[in-house]
Amino acid sequence: MNDRADLLIRATVHTLVPGEPPRRAIAVSGGRITALAAEPDGLDALIGPGTEVVDAPDATVLPAFDDTHTHLVMAAHSVHGVPVHRARDLAGFLDLIRERAATTPAGRWITTTVNWQEVLLAEQRMPTTAELDAVTTDHPVLVRRGAYNMVLNSAALRLAGITEETEAPPGGVIERDDRGRMTGRLINRAIEPVEQVLPRPGLAERVEGLRAASAAYAATGIGTVRDCAVPLEDLDVLDAARAEGALAVRVRVLVSGFAARTREQVDALLDRMDDWRASGRDDGRLSLWGVKFGIDGGFEAGALEEHYEGQPCYHGHLLWEPEDLVAAVDRVVERGWRVGVHAWGDRGLRVLLDVFEQVVKRRPGLAPGTLVVEHGGLARADQRARAVALGIPVTVQHPLLHDGALTLRRAWGEERTTAVFPLREWLDEGAELSAGSDFPIGPYGAMLSVWGMTTRDTTAGVLGPEHALSRTEAIALHTVNAARLTGESTLRGSLRPGALADLTLWPVDPLTCPVERLHDLRPTRTIVDGRTV
Image (tube, rainbow, N blue to C red; front, side, top):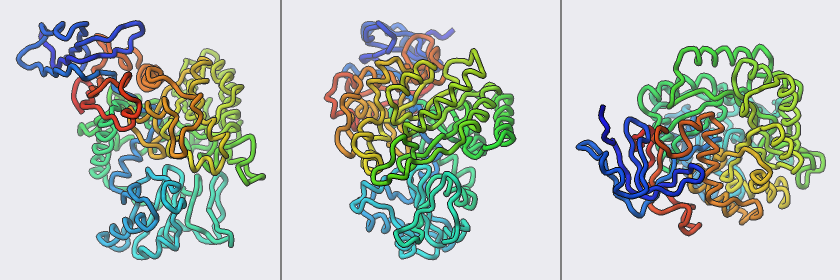
């Protein structure tokens, strides 16, 4: 048996094993951690002719990070979009689309990247149909911000069958100006007709998109993503990317259940998921975690107990009748799958906890971590207590608050925006928290997230510093706690012999470097399965 290491790193190693002091050397072989040592030369006996030795006495090793709530598939789609996230004003935004139109055959769709916020543009608003028409009428243009907001030009609206007479579906918004005319903006379920007519790129293009997007995640220190709301048909695309070695990170999939409204639709979704499970395609690189639903909207539509700022009759939207969501969630867990549910506002979270409580009563002995709150943005003290008592894990995303703070403050006001993601309280009260980005609403990045959770800095300034965490706690939310959420604590999340060799090597110690350094800190290596990705 070969007892030599494939890789040996001499650096400060924070194992994140409770009570264990930093080590000074770590050895990897066959995709696993094989040994750690208290001294830099403590593993030198494992060096052989094929061993790569990294001698980095000033560097620091940590586990690779998880992003526990993000959208890798959407990031892959966005790889080929017009890079409007680089614009600083609408003139520059529209010029980027104009440049793409000049090189795009007439009739072909033009789409944008999705990771931008209109409040960060000088005009602090989205473009309109009229402005997009002034750029091109020869192409359908789709400007997308995040998952649930679109603006279309006239050509795209025609293809989607949306006219001035079209009524918004329940849970959707077709925005109109003060004269009642469409602006071209569609929100939440109003985007569904566009999704149905938008051309799908070919398999090869999509695999290359996943290759580029997953490598970009890995470059920030992320080794595993929990992709929340993957369309069922995209499982085959992920599988093809895995087969071609195009996934730089591990992927844990939540299949989108947003279109499954009836028992029959839920069963059809689960039948296909069961077929996947039976096929044996789940492995360490790609696996199905469960199903994603949503109880309410986002910044402009999250369900609140009190009305929106300046809108005394508007409290956001609940997307389900509670009894219908109980039935859907119960059906999923009955079939042995887990469920994550988006809840953003305090009314949304209250109703979701009512739903989860009924499911727990129906299913005594339900395995811990089967039901998960995604976001729990505005979580009141009584709601936090209920979640803790029910043993419901919560995923939180400071990058979402960072980029969305100005938009959220307009909609919710200063007090409620400041109260979003009360991380300090959640942890002190015993909650099971893990952290992510919610890209494309928030930017992904291991230390960017740690910086945000420890400073509470946002585009609107520092909000709620009393909710901040220590660096140790913030890192744990992306490592130890994250692996617990996915049920992989025995394999990942901390560094110990026998664990998977998912590591990050940092040029400085993130636990002690100046806090402002964390914002732009990138690892010199991200290692997954013992391989530098």
